[in-house]
Length: 243
Image (cartoon, rainbow, N blue to C red; front, side, top):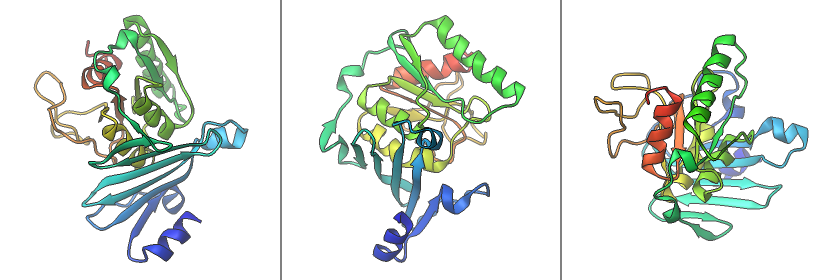
């Protein structure tokens, strides 16, 4: 239905989505007008009758997402982010100004284990959670819906979420729409892993800190999103065992 509506209304636009790609290679995002679509994020939740699932639509121009819409039908939540025009939940502006000073010790931390089942991947994911628990946090969560994880950070329901420690990293349709919502709400979203010259796309200085102004790339195999820049970087370093 989504693809038919896009084709009818914008016949010259491209569409990238989980249903169009399947298990194949995700096509690159070009400068052409492109929609990135996930009709059901949180598929296991949906199939099990759990309410945390959503539809995710992003419109990309100039090679990056500029508009994101995430609709959770069971909870009747509509998240919208438009580059330069803010983020909204059910028509009300989202602004995370009250979360500027929050640290990891005060944070609700969200992560998803996904479908990674190899022993080495499980060891890496559990070790990351152990480091967070040893460091100290307010609580941990796993919702089963990555798009809503990021939207909930934008709302301040979660304080930080991450993925990509091992094989559980997400795809562009998991990031595209929600990343616009989060950034327009004042959150910071970055790649979790990487260094200059690596496969990932954030820039880091010699101490491993994110360079100011570097953009998150939705084709990254990892992500960390927090209500403020300092918390995002603190979580990244603890998860990776850098501090």
